[in-house]
Figure 1 (spheres, rainbow, N blue to C red):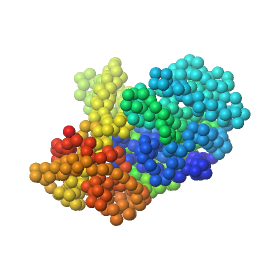
Figure 2 (figure 1 turned 45 degrees about the vertical axis):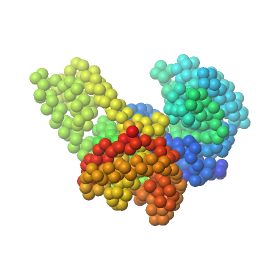
Figure 3 (figure 1 turned 90 degrees about the horizontal axis):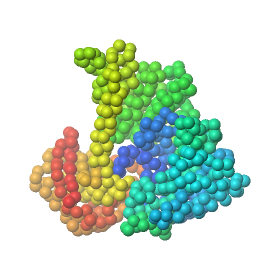
Figure 4 (figure 1 turned 135 degrees about the vertical axis):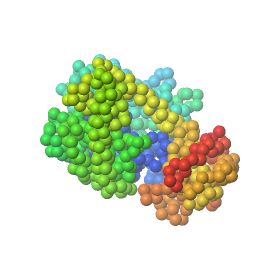
Length: 628
């Protein structure tokens, strides 16, 4: 089976097991201030895993495209991609470990056809300090599952990946216990960092064995499921939300336990064709084939470059097909970075001409089955990407000219590492091209140019980390209490603007951190001091009234035309939308389509204060406000 077959078979299999198929979420989330992109299959389901009821019941399944830029430097090896697709199924207080483990094993072996002899699994070893026992329940279920397949599955207690690298796998071992660094799930990471009040629990990961000969022991150590190297590849993870973190820091069992399963479509497909290289599957190989044709070079001799191009252009297509355009900010910059990195690697292959017009249609064909509600801009995507490609190639030409200017400006004609960093950072001209051009033009480089470049790069990284923390800290993945308050207050601010300034005002953009909120809105004039006070007083009046905040799901047309709910992106919303109402149902303070986090009543928000009302762009102004 190819990837499309496996995706379809997975959904059909889950439906037979009583699950309801739900549509995937967009990669770019409109109302989630905590993250740039959908980075996992479970991210859109988080509110329901935390307790909200889902309209489609307690058994759900989907196939969710995801993007993780934190993996961008790893792309080039056989299995890392920034873009991937997660096959998911969830039990919201319904079935638990036994049914989940048995079902996934059945899917892998009987539907996909994987050899059970090549399947290995991991479980949680427990934590005495917090009174959380070893997950022997999951291990025993696995032993029974393997036994039915004629396999005597022995258990190994490795604890940490580092210990495994030294120890390896002993004959007959198939179930491995690791600590919370490997086999525990919470929004905060490990056990120590589990947020108070949060559900959490052990997980059981599933790996495929590609053979002892695939492990480079000199580089990665001895092979075991959690090791680096090519022998074992994780193909699925089953999270068992079994506990909650109490206010005193202890853990107790949940009455209502959830299952969150995610399986990598690309990796399961790779296992099904017996290849540890995910770039040989049907979603990626056609791109590689076209690159070989355009460049006249082979994949075997240019694997890193072709893998990076194939991965990055796949991500660039999905983002642009959802309406995102390249820019120098947030999501737009991420898109620009993917395109530029792909073009730079194309230069390494000798592809000096524009080539996206030949690659993007191949990618688009693989995603024809994704709904238009997700890929709202698929017809214009190629034009967006071609425009960026043309502009970047012009940027590269400017970088070459600047390189020669810098060399001429130095009395000894020498380029140092900080010059090279400026060429990369300001002109998009990467260090490897600078070094190559210097060599060809007999331009000298300083003896310590690499150290100087790294110094400048590290300084920029520190600045970026500081800015990133200021922009995104305090979101759902990090408790999220203040961000949730600010998100709710944004609804009140918009409603107050509509009530006191103009009913035609709508949200043009927002940015929320744990320290402040920002709302962009359309208007034809700067607010007067009196108008600002009216808006501010109205928001505080609603906060003081301690209004209830409730939600329900409706058909989109009903929400828009009958409820008169406010929405900024009606053309992008799915057929079913979540509507949040603040205040009385018949005469609410605010009624808005939204998928973000909210408080349960306004009285806990604090005092609302507008700090700035400034111009953002033509016809758009920006309010910055805080809660005191």
